[in-house]
Length: 191
Image (cartoon, rainbow, N blue to C red; front, side, top):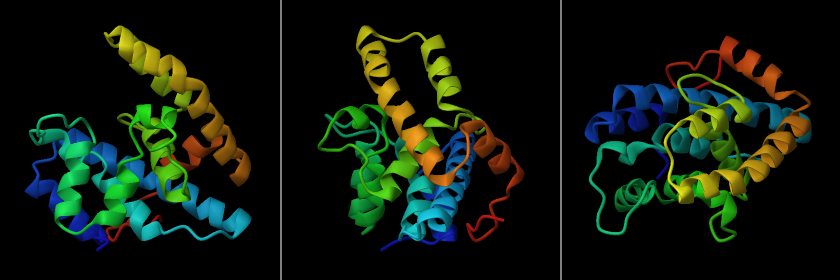
């Protein structure tokens, strides 16, 4: 099952997703759908926008749920979504954490996965560049392992940003400008 926009939003209440994470998920959804619409225009490829929208809205659903032993983000969310029959959405979400891009077994490969991953890495409390997002991470107090992941992931994330932006014929700055001007409608459509 792929939830509608309304069904995905209702899961936020069910799983007590904090308000700032709800806003983040909406912004990620808006950027991911923007990328998808531009890619479809440029290369006429099929992207499951219903799956992409649901994954963007639910990618952080586990932020207020106690994990089971051995679970990290997004493992808890993936498990919960699979338990309620949302396997397609869960499989896309599985590929969105930063470390996934370093692991060939879970690195984003399908368009839906790449666009969710990149949209998440270009969003904090607003849509920003990959460089700005990494600068925010680097300003945090991180363990040596986390710094190592950041250092290894950065060139791969930049490569993905360049690939997507080249595909749609826009610079990252232009993407940010256009996305900030767009609106996500009450059914999850990009206006």
